[in-house]
Length: 504
Ligand SMILES: NC(=O)c1ccc[n+]([C@@H]2O[C@H](COP(=O)([O-])OP(=O)(O)OC[C@H]3O[C@@H](n4cnc5c(N)ncnc54)[C@H](O)[C@@H]3O)[C@@H](O)[C@H]2O)c1
Ligand SMILES: NCCCC=O
Ligand code: NA
Image (cartoon, rainbow, N blue to C red):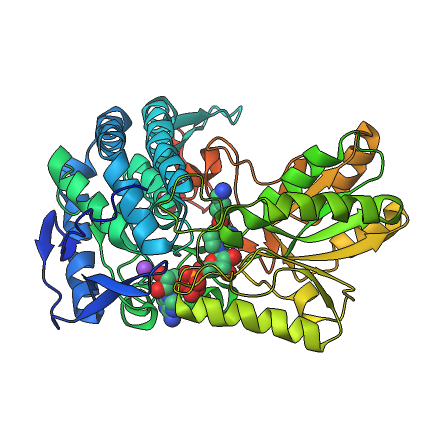
């Protein structure tokens, strides 16, 4: 077992390069979901702190040490942050697990991804210098034109708890690479590592105000950020209902938003797969990794009738083999869900499925050997119909529902039978069929013969009610840039649209 006595730093808000007590001096308890114990607290920002942070961010943009940096200069800061994250990886990973219930293995992988994401955007920041000004040829003797890529300004980044630091960094790294000044509002349910990012920024000497970190409750800290007149964009990852509120607030000021919301993603398994075990493991990973608290979790298994019984049998064998324990224990593969609220919500989805007539094939309860902590067994639900809540709504927990199909057309219809459109997976050795599914799936992310692998270079986001805009890749950087066209009249001749008074 890793050292659970890693001290929880007592931090303040990180504003203008300094730790600053919230104006109202309120704090929110930190709860370890594996033990249900309070292990520390975080500062609770309110509208007053948002105003101070926005001012600090605006000053950063106006100052040469941030506002006039080249991409190459910003890349140095990003690389220094990445190096510090790796240096502190073990402590950061432990803190992430203590705060969110994430297995230590997954927390450590997240820290590698965090560092990798900063490094990736460092490369893109450098490349931006040569792309900053792009001439556009009009085939005109009268005009010379070019397009500038400039930082969008002050951006608000509002993020969830399921990958507390990683989801924040998917926005922080491109925002800083672009040259924006950012205000990060992480989830009140898991903010420790985001506050530690503040300490890292202080240590590496990131110019003050370039990144500000405001922890606090959604309506009290996130709300004022979303509606602030001097915030130029909100990039949000979280639930659909909160996304709607943010979009409503931003709409009052015609403030751009990007929304990465939830999902109810399908994994379609065909009977031509060579190896049931390989498909079973991907199916498991697709729904039980991070205890199912993944926006892109493939939570609806759509399996061809001819192999359904054999496949479910194999799935059960794999599921029974998952080690459920304190997330700091060696080889733990399923930790608790993040909070008491999430625990109740997941169990309610399971009991509703039962009362609607579905069968709990496996799991559905608290594991017997864990008396404390917000643990839910990995759960597989069959006899599901398309009008049931469990088929339609995002659980955000370790719950897989299963339906069978006979034909390809039926599988496509079932896969797209959702208001969401984030991700979809197909398992088949028929290349042409996989191509047909790639086209037919109404989503932003497609996995073929796998589920969940995620790469910094690729766009991340969805359609339908999973939101719009893209994190990651070059698209993640573009979303923090203002594209400015510049048109210069180069002719010595008059424009001659009006009759010249000198000719009267
Ligand atoms: N598509 C993706 O990339 C992606 C990634 C991770 C999580 N998610 C989604 O996030 C959800 C789970 O995360 P969550 O429970 O933290 O979501 P949430 O919407 O409850 O909270 C997300 C963030 O919004 C803040 N917030 C809450 N109310 C607010 C308000 N009125 N104004 C401004 N900010 C407010 C919260 O404090 C938090 O920081 C799931 O639906 C999941 O699918 C999506
Ligand atoms: N693999 C990272 C998924 C992020 C969404 O929840
Ligand atoms: Na917590």
